[in-house]
Amino acid sequence: MGRAPRQMEELFGKPVEAVSGFGRPEDNGGGWTVTLELLELPRIPDTTSLLGTYEATLYADGNLVDARRVRRYPRNQYDPIQRGEDS
Image (cartoon, rainbow, N blue to C red; front, top):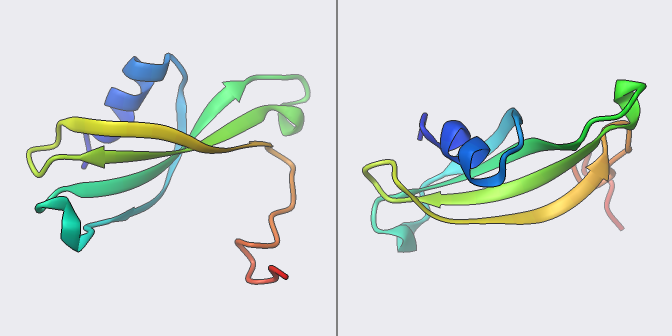
């Protein structure tokens, strides 16, 4: 799982800002699912930069199998879902 950020940076050409989640789904054959935040578009000031949330699926040996962007948002955006306030 530690190789996921490097592989994602190489694949998408964007720096990884953070690993925001990980897990081992039962239907993944022992692999991992990792959620990462990538810097999509740097801006000045930095609070207006755009980030993307990506999900990566890895084999048990750490090799990347699948990757996709699930969300794109400004760094300063309030996210009610993450705070448990979704409607």
